[in-house]
Length: 463
Length: 95
Image (cartoon, rainbow over all chains, first blue to last red; front, side):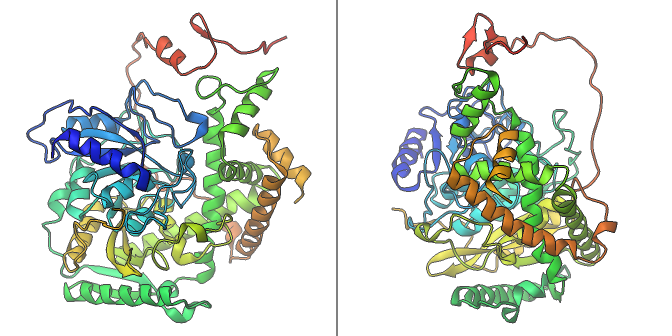
């Protein structure tokens, strides 16, 4: 398709999906790289990744006019691979949110059914791949912000091992949990995209040498004899007080997927983990991420960038900017961060959260000695209806809805692939593995994908 | 947990909350407190060393100490709303 037609398609999707913050009117290919499998491919990038001379807002009023003067490392790598940047995608403000409804430019709608959420925070990236506006998109993932919207939009979302992809130029949310991730319609395509942007970077000290890793080739490997486990407390319907039809269907489809794994020659076993520890995941994530976010975003003052606040002294000016610039949810997260870092509260909240983090990461590392990966449903069902969303998402801290944060706690590679539909809305499964064993996870996911009919599927509901 | 305290924490990070936002934050902190109180009861939690990062593997190499002209002043100024000549203007801070 000619590029001008792709731009037209992007604009035409806006009133339905609202997945772009910025569409580039005349997208350009900077480098013609005939050796790259991505040469000439159009990509969309989440709006919290710095793009030189292109608006990068983090979907926040605090940065509504911010134009970076340098490119994130991955933006340069995408150019080197011959890709063409089509636009910047709508997200939950500053990455803090899980619904796709908190951007300063409005709600992102699910292309399978416009009345439903996409999940977040990489909402626009997931929606655009699902709607076939682009084949490839970039997101970021601090709790499950690539893998949850991938599940709800029926596409593949991959968050590799911490440090496989440079975060230089990513707006930091919670640095010890932040990752860049990739979206496509097949496991092979996320492998190709991830191969193009991975690598050690002198500007990000958490990156490591991954030149020996080739994710694209990993899809050619055999899976017979691989071993996966699932967590009994999350997959047994009898563990739940509230057994909705949607949850029952999710677990039934999960069982069918497990049988398909076994037909491939993958061994799958049930493992029990202390439910008290699993229940501690979400509150611990909330403490750690809010604390780090409060600190990381203290540079948003409206002085060097962002709309200048009103006031007679510097503190009043900064306070006015921050009060008007952040939405209610982001302000509340920052205050929670401020609260958990207070000297009197630090041990009970912040340090205990970090202790839980160690307990769960140690437990997973112990299990990854025996198993190649953990396989679980991504959620209790399909995407929620926008009108049914509850404002206070802390109350709704079901373990099955929040377990993917495990991969952020430990930096584990983790991928979501579609595995079915409930009420005509897609659902997904998640596979998480050992640190730096990304090839194994990609390979297993690729083979499981081959047993189902959801590879390269395109959402039709939005048209 | 009360509004006065919440507003103090908000003020510490230069944010004003509306009454409704302060009430909602209190609600959320009460839920969080319930969870964190349960976590305090996990076996031997106090003996666990807090984990601050996924794993230890950092590439900290020193770059050569070569002076460069960043040529960035004009670029930086483009994003600020209040600029005077080649500087960002703010009210007088030091008396």
